[in-house]
Image (cartoon, rainbow, N blue to C red; front, side, top):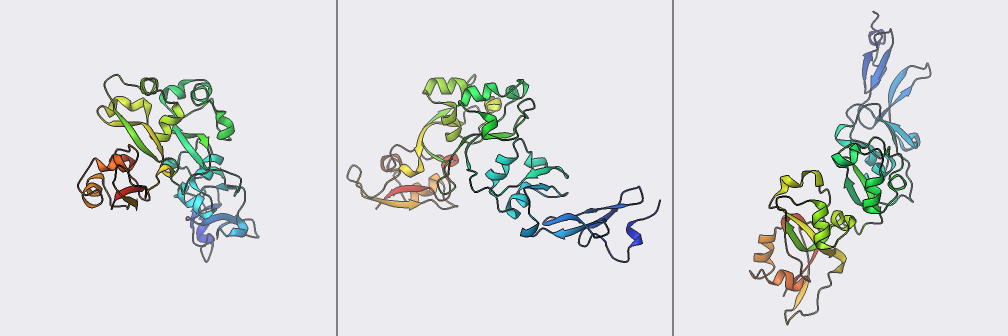
Length: 288
């Protein structure tokens, strides 16, 4: 069989790899930030993906990740996922065609829900829609309700996030998972909604709750924006502190709360520090 790639004096794919197709022709495997294109002769090549070359769809090149795609097209991760419901970013296959429309009207997803095994066995999206009171396809255009994949996350609530941290909540009550506990039982016990459960516990997998025995699930809380510092609480003067990347509950008590753990909930309207609810940029009231 003729070696089509060897017939060229220079690499026809430019920065890409020339691969014989076994039929006398060749194809190009392009690196990230390069896209397949065609020469004037009609032969394939690789060219830089410039702003002028952007379109509403894009075909994934081998080795690319969701991150590569949404960063290049100036989208947020939420915008890419909203336009491509069901996409598996952990196993992004070469040749997958993605919608990459830079639509300023697209809102970020405020709350996501990971599809469970039970959901995937259902013939449609009715169970999830009833649980969250939403139109799932409207929130996730292109979603195939007849082929739900366990673990894939779908949007169940949209809305503009607050500095990118809207999904985080200051937890005021935890429940340790016990034997036999289910998401349904926790919802019933604490009188919260499915939406609230996932706002408070992003990424919670109800299918695997038995693997979380003795771990704490947040069952009550409030938005981070509810924290207002400065006014004395029970005579304790306070000021605002912004959590840093290296902070932990233990280090905060020592360095910021005068080695007095009860001051944490006192000054922060009942919030109890747990490492899983602590994040960089979170506002806290600390004593002065």
